[in-house]
Amino acid sequence: MSLNANSISAEQVESSSKTILAEWLSRWFTGQSQVLSGKEIQFPLAEVEFDQGPSQSPPSSKTLIRVRAVSLWDESMDSEQGRVKHDHVRMIFVAKASGEKARERSQKVGELLHWLLNNPSATVDLAEKGIFDIDPMKAEPLASTDHYQYMVQAKMCLQYEVVFRT
Image (cartoon, rainbow, N blue to C red; front, side, top):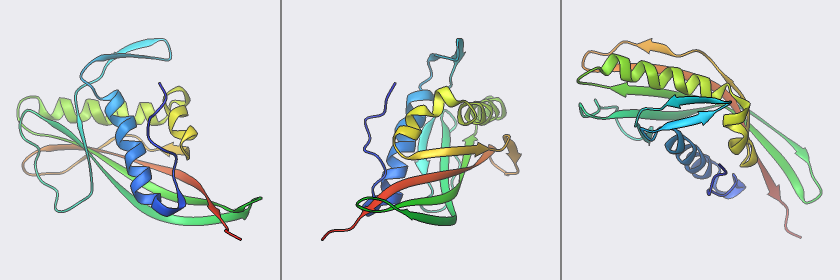
């Protein structure tokens, strides 16, 4: 199941990585059964949003996956046409739910996120687009007064090429 999004580009590192991750997440969290590594798994339906503005409680019928990137460090190396850049980031995925069975829904999404990010068969499409070396931590519950949240943090590398024009 390859992704339609373009690979990460030097001109749009942040937006292209968000587009790739949004497409990848929405392919898994469809509310349908999916087969991965020979196992059929029921994935809950979840909407994806990126950290823009204050965090709010999801409507009672929805589960949200909110994604935020924190830059850790970057490095680059010479290539034939310029430089290959590696931006090392920590992606923070927070599964949020409120209403009926909110704890179970947010926990299930958090645990499935961890499992997917840890599974090379699931992340091969990300690697093809420039997101690789993914190292997720286990899903952890987060305190909230009006909804349930589970967080998965994952270190990963964003790779793209900076081409020098002559």
